[in-house]
Amino acid sequence: MIDSNGFRANVGIVLGNQQGKVFWARRHGQNTWQFPQGGIDEHESPRQAMFRELYEETGLTENHVEIIGQTDDWLRYRIPDHLLRRHSKPLCIGQKQIWFYLHLTGSEKDVNLCCTGHPEFDCWRWIDYWKPVDEIVAFKRKVYQQALTQLERFV
Image 1 (cartoon, rainbow, N blue to C red):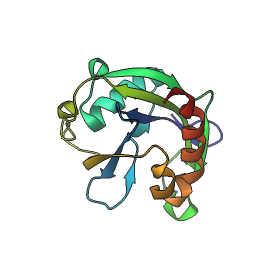
Image 2: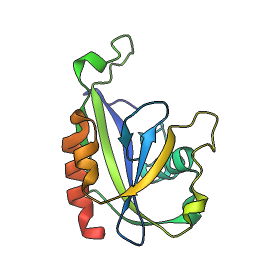
Image 3: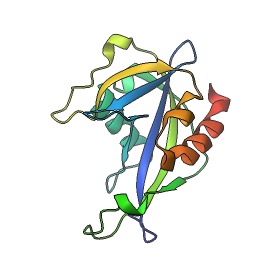
């Protein structure tokens, strides 16, 4: 769903473990790492989209996690001009995201990056809470900083 300003509705997921580390995954076939995230389908709530994306990208279900909190409002980032898909209508210029902080209540063995026919990620690891701000692609850095700042109170 792309709004009238060109921003695609999306969810972001920060998954934490007992040691306060967060789930960090490498995009399939690339050398870029990120949190799980994905679009909100029409007639889908952010919470529903979060659970769908969580399963599609990590194999985890509602039974493996606990929702601890979410960002107060939409956080936005713009896609750099050279990455815009200008042939797509309506044109998507960026993402507006609701971010969720989840706690893993299941086992690490429950993670399955290949539970769908098109894996988003090819490996994952646990990292320090603030490390993603340093490692994420530059155009997402500000939104990661905002999300982690708002979600820090739930860690």
